[in-house]
Length: 321
Image 1 (cartoon, rainbow, N blue to C red):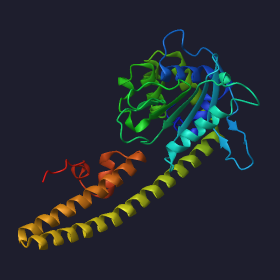
Image 2 (cartoon, rainbow, N blue to C red; image 1 turned 180 degrees about the vertical axis):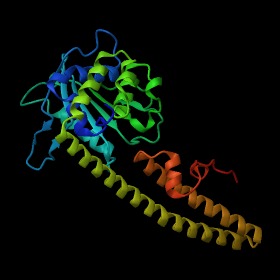
Image 3 (cartoon, helix red, strand yellow; image 1 turned 135 degrees about the horizontal axis):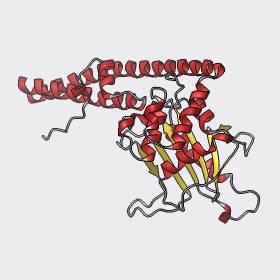
């Protein structure tokens, strides 16, 4: 079967990994991400209710994708994010803090607090400053890198940064990420080459889910919503780029005129115009490229949208004066 639902859509992800009979699949995925040595690996999971109740009447309601606890009482929060919302990283921190803080009741001692590990899959670039597709964030001292506590971890796995094809995926994490990213286009024979029983089981379960007509209808509706959202976001970004481009052009020309007039030379005027114009364009390009990359677009796709060359979007080294 080739027309499979994509696990990058959140409700498909939850159906695939959040059911009791599929706990071995979630266990395999988490062990691949944590990459622990034998003896420290997860051997059992308890699925928890993903809704976080309110502590105060005005608290924000939170419903997570997946929530589980292992044999050592560690809590795992797993999310699949397709759309890049404003303040995405702040949202991740808020969810982690709610999970950590709600562990204690009444007069319980702080020794009852257990590690909370958040794992976020994003179908967009969440951290453009780094090239790694998998990053692990902990609380460390800035100068020395000493870890304050192992009770807090946030893993972020960004699909647009993962460039290996399924043939090039060798370790367990690469294979799971390839499956999540490409399952709707992979064949069973291709995946079976990995000889991983949990991955094979995940593919078979995805085939079963893909044959459910109600899930299929909901999936199609979700895809339309995702496409509409990205179209609106792209349109807003491009509109902002056009306005910024015009403002940068005007500012660059004005700066050039002023500098050229002050120097009183035609050469100075022309040089100032060109330098101001280039700086204005580059600043706007940098901002719009970052925003579109966060929506999951490649540099080539962004160049096509903005009708410029890829070279124009590359960051330029500052010129010495």
